[in-house]
Image 1: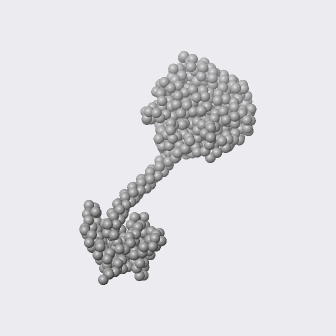
Image 2 (image 1 turned 60 degrees about the horizontal axis):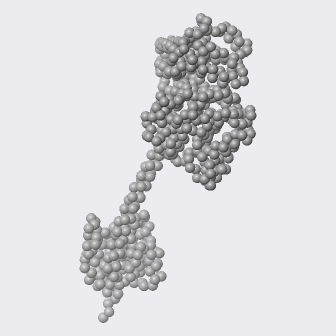
Image 3 (image 1 turned 120 degrees about the vertical axis):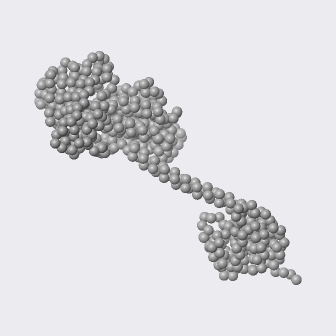
Length: 593
């Protein structure tokens, strides 16, 4: 008597000896067996349990879905042909419930047609077994899918860990980018006479661009290019920005800022990392441009009058962070500029930009833009257009930075009011300084005196006015009292450049002479009165004649006296004109710059 196929298959399964294929697992696999024939289902369950597997057996597709939700099995053996919810439909529900978990589903079917068997895979199954089932094939498939499932879980765990790491890394980058943005934000770049473009190759920019105004009104600008790209290149920008902005706000000149940055980078940068940089100071009112260039391309000056390249500062110094500060030449070069002239600074990402043929944009192509006679107002946009057209769709291979500064004597400092500490209550105090010829040759003492003054009385809201008064009196004592310079030289064409060159020459040769500065502060109601007295050991000058010239508007120089009188309650000269005393009154809240 022939038995039904299901009974034959169950009999063959019952004859299979128990196996230890998965006994080594800490927890046995849980198998969901779904078949509407009770005998086959029971015998299959017994066999799987002898294999060391945990088995949940149900007789319909609907029960399979409910059992899957409750039991969360690791694998499913699914009969295809069942009344009601068949195996295909149950599989679709289970796939939806399993989400991104890998649950192997092996269809068990009596069908033998190849197209029908292909449907098993197309409808969501991972594999199929035909009835009567070969026990060895069943065992092999369970083992294979068990290993595949462990591999999938390991990959999924690594993927989730990587996704979590990427989320953390993205968050860290966002925080770092926010910190960099705040540190690197330079409100001086908002000045209407400045245009700039920064295009980083990576998330973080290895190029550095800073602008700030001295209390006396000169514009300081720094362009830097750190070795490499991305975060490793950008990490050094934080201390550099802090030094540049802090020292500029206190009135330090470019040479001292260069020295301080180099000393800092020498201490913190690892070997092989350095900063190519250009620092410039623009005194537009006095037509003077000074610059220090180390390792970056030339600073180019476009003359507004002749619409052509009018001058350049070439790189004659080592980049910062390479050599000891006492071996670094921190001196600046100076030249005369005229209102309307354009000053261009850029990193090597501009001349070294490449097109699809790997050709360089080149310094020659850049300078050709300066010799094509463009109107000064459109030159910056023309350079960007030429660069964009040349590069086309070729991928950027370096950080690219370009900046244009227009010489504009009327440009104002756009910096927001300082968030300095609240001023201290007015108090009585005094401080005296005396500078010899040797010290005057070596450094600029104005920032040091301003720092003492601001730290003593915290007059940060008044610092620009106070600096203007102190600087004017001090420079008059130095330039006219000790160096005996004639301001009428500035009235000639090119006279500003000649004047400052002569100043450097005479200062270098100064052998004797002293300048004394005394600061006295007295309480005056809700504020105070700051008295600034400056004396020099020079022969003096006819200050009465100078005042008469100003009253008659006969001189193009000496305007500083008028500015001092506009903010001070008094300005008096004594002796032979080599002692000047100004009194600056102040009150809380009346010193917005």
